[in-house]
Length: 423
Ligand SMILES: *Cc1c(COP(=O)(O)O)cnc(C)c1O
Image (tube, rainbow, N blue to C red; front, side, top):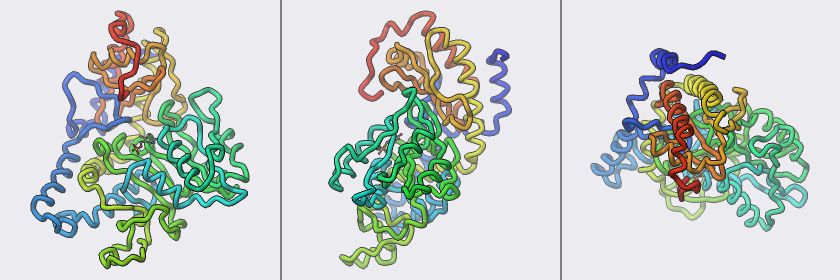
């Protein structure tokens, strides 16, 4: 392996086809932002699509629902179109609504129909807590306790094996929810193979795409996945708390929403104000209340940029960046006790790198003080996500050198080895 020099990375930047997008983001001088997996940066286009909605409100008041460049009543249609290449599904299978957690509640309450023999929900022990809380509360609502939730165990504490998940797809399992990319190790699960295995056993399966959407391509329709949910503030750069998304396979659109509300109505009937709910015929039936327009608006600009860049180009650059980061970390940081726990195989690696160190909490603080922004995941993980649309190859080198200095000069010892409230 040849040594990666800063000069070599500069050359990569010079011929990077996505480099032009960097200028569209608000970046801070002397800060290397590697936290796009938690909150993507603000772009000028997201800002202007937000202003556009505020302008419509200013000009038209209530009539903004039907007037202006983008009437709010039909806003979701355009967003569903923009989401199609990212999830690999038809627009009528997609709805931009709610948050990941509320969309999990909606999808589970819609699709989970336990019987005496088949009532368990299968998840994993490495998933994000909110998903697990939602699943447990859905079980409780149906009269079950936590023992009806089966969590696949990880052998190494970082990753899951397809065979271990499939082994748990027993006859008493009604539904499965798994992450597309694990939020810590960044492992991609084999969504296609898992879906086939679940369907062979008559089990409904869905994925939480929070850490894969906007970073990894999906083919939900082709794989015949039953449902999916995702947030839009991580790799999609929609802004803090921006509105999430759900996908429901066409074959399930006959299901009445588990959580019904008037915005799930057939649009032509919604304002008849009848007390009998007539659901929309597509995935928009699973919206509940009035769309949160100001948290939805930035997505137009953010997703247009993603469309122009193309998810395949984003994925190719992202993989190259994490490849290079792995090499740099191996050469310069592993000697200081860092361990890379992200899978090295391209098919198994999402858009971020997870490295562990006993002093991770205060190394993270020292990194932030030095202008490198990762995030810390207790007890000892540092997550770094070089983002294809706004990070450069040179930043990979600079960040690793900054961390190396923190280690050689033991600068992290100036900080407490405890996490912050929001870590
Ligand atoms: C980010 C994330 C969430 C957050 O859910 P919200 O409802 O948007 O707060 C949930 N699950 C996973 C796997 C995540 O990565």
